[in-house]
Image 1: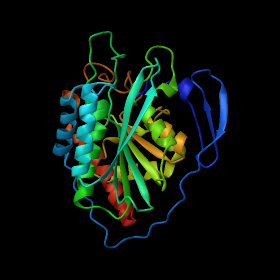
Image 2: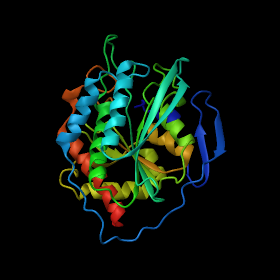
Image 3: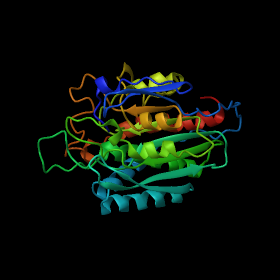
Image 4: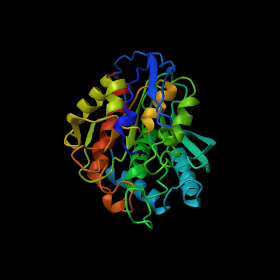
Length: 341
């Protein structure tokens, strides 16, 4: 997850019109035509729709712990590759049609990053699709601490979102709703350039690649999960999400407010735009995507004291937070399939 830099990332783009953004590499403004958004598909209420399942936080927690047990999922390491193999196997065991989108991209320092976006599709032939996403790699340097020996385990920043989506995938396999659902684990999100030089496009390399190579039919919208496991997390309305998918944000937050286990976690705080995977995916594909992310301006470090440090381990993860997010997202999926979202 990137450091928010408002002076550089105050980007407002309209998916159906022009995409205007400030280049963080040369500070020169540029304008290009945005990719075409997906054609809107109207859904009818389905009286025979599958009921919303109960999200199992214990199961999601176990999925988070399993990822952390592999070791830091840093690019080009055995722990990263072993975790990827396990994610592929889990999605297949949950009945998904799995694709491994392999690609190699240069990092900010020229290092070739051997990357894999992992995609699990449910109802792959259905024209009406949504995408649920999280990144599965971890930060290669603890750049938010003065301890040079610190290792970023990425329990919250990476594993928490993946753990929630794996639990949702388990339910999709048991009771598949009548819509297409793509669960995507983006790679190479967190290998961005450290230090004072802010190279925006050195981050989110997996979501950039996925957005550029998105296959038809395009999903109607997407939901990104990032840092969704920490105790006492708060999820405000992120800037790019409200700029580009305000109705979707309203629906998700309204749904959260109606769920006792979720209401206290989803706030109406208006957050600044945060350059996360949803930003790059929208920019490259034209598909609206919102970001559910733990960030608060009342915290001096925004993302919390464990972010990009050696403290992002399993002791940070709270099952109540996983449940709060997971129940909202799984309810959104099944209610959309029922035509009542």
